[in-house]
Image (cartoon, rainbow, N blue to C red; front, side, top):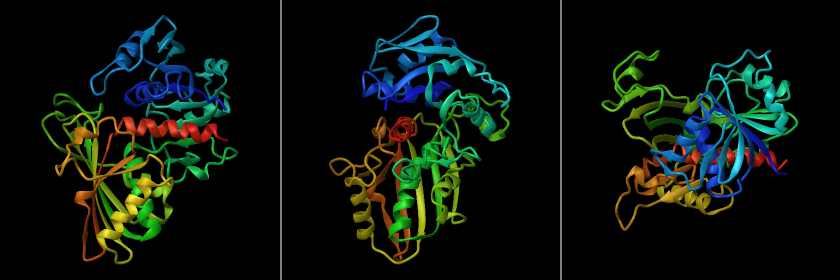
Length: 348
């Protein structure tokens, strides 16, 4: 079926999903009928057309008072308050006219009651959010558990997170074929919009420090993201994130203590198999550098894979302690996975 979609929230991820939808499919992979944000429509057009990370949009961008026009295709625009309405309020009722199959909430501010109200009020048949929100019917990591989607019972769906989509496929492979006793996940993440350019107030104090001058340790939910999809790993994972002063491409340093002895060769063969097979299409890439040289993180800008395994840095100590270095474009790759989640909904 042709999926009719809407987007609430046009920050980095909302705009990224919009851009990805039209970048490879001039007519749009899915039929995006309406988009909503607190900004004026001309601001949205400006930010979509001119991106400091990815450059100029590969399609024309125009606007009028009530539409964003992408590649000549008009998309209805509704300016809304960033503050979420009470669940019992029908504040997005005006979106019902579009007959949406799915509404993407990319604000990062919604409660589970907010999202369920969108289904209850028949604003859309399904709601997908871009955070791991407690109470969702399903946390879906495409390539790992997308086949468990049940249209009769899964109405509010989390597309997990960028780091969740990166590390979960790797952990799933290891857990299935070798087993994991425990693992530590270290995320080395580019700066985010909740940080301060100069020292200032922040509810999380250290994120108020100037983002270009420090590496900031902070909490991350990546372990929880993986455990939601792989319940057999519950209680076996711990994680920490370091925010670093780069703009894009995140890295993950994983140390996993495996359930049985193995060899480095077995692990390499295992990951290469999944990178080349249809089991996880377009999800995993195994990278060995270029002409005998290591790549820099920026070389992975715009890569659509959920995760890139740096094969030269795969280590195994005493047959059971596995070390992995992973990278992923934390915006573009994640936006591609959100569209893959839309594809799962469209196929049922």
